[in-house]
Image (cartoon, rainbow over all chains, first blue to last red; front, side, top):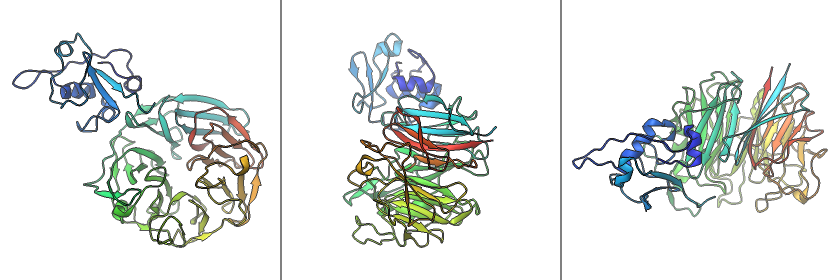
Length: 100
Length: 370
């Protein structure tokens, strides 16, 4: 995952972050929700910073990108692109350009 | 040797300013949490090393940071502020229903007796309490139960911005909400009553309504906790019966609009305000930054200008941005939206800037260190 600067500061990490995300469901796929669960489990300080507490909706000024796709409006049970699940491409959490 | 620690919250980070008792040479640390809006930074009176900070921004929401070493280092603590039950709706600016939604913490008030206890005033207005050093927060819901559905926001949002603890009565507390008014509890937040009798507000159809007044700030002196001072959206007010009744003390102020109000640490009848031109123009009158002091509990005011800019000054002083220390020569401090933090080591007779070019200042608190 690639986090925006403010969240890297909060989580006290630098650069890209790697998290292990289990595949689940009948199709054994890694979903957007599972990725978010994993990053929040690894860094509890990020709870409420990317989405509402308790696995709630994405915060309005936060976007999810991967493999040149915008995943922001996809349901959380949507599988992430294959390269993301394989760990060869990052899942990007991006602060919206608005409000700067 | 005694000293002071000034805690400054700004739009782009927090700063800690320290000096010895002379308050002439200052050390500036920060910015902590660069780029974040720091609505309030406050310190425990019980354990001065324990500090609290409200850290937020529109992208990533709310964090609460705690320091246990006087601001040298910080750690995030609990940041979940969930309303008790289904909060329902309050009123929006146009009178239509609007769901309660948490957006940020405006004010953190540490307990006077327990370093692990702290109250939080939030937007949309509600009162929360933590008793585990910030790990978790619980709403005290009885406050919103008092006609919360009729509360409406002020220009800055519907915020619970002031929390005052009665030092003589652990069950008594005062809060102020923009724009619901002032409230008091006498039973440890189990129940609340509005304390707005005597307030007049032109923006209300019923100008002396029980709730709906835009109270900007409350102040009290620990030696006279039943005497409250209020800076309202127009009018400087005073109560001598713990808020049951208010009367106007604007007196000879050049304008009685403003945000801050505070009381001298050793003189319960010495009060400070910073008059602002009007509700439509939030700058000092005539480009002159003036603090006004009354030594008579209001009514008669004198302008304090030595060391403050008296021309071309168009900053604002926000409601949580003034504080006093408790050294023998009471120090007064305030921060501006222009990024200056001014200090007076002689109760306001003379002023000098501690810093000039911070981001816009949102809050100022000061700890007196032994």
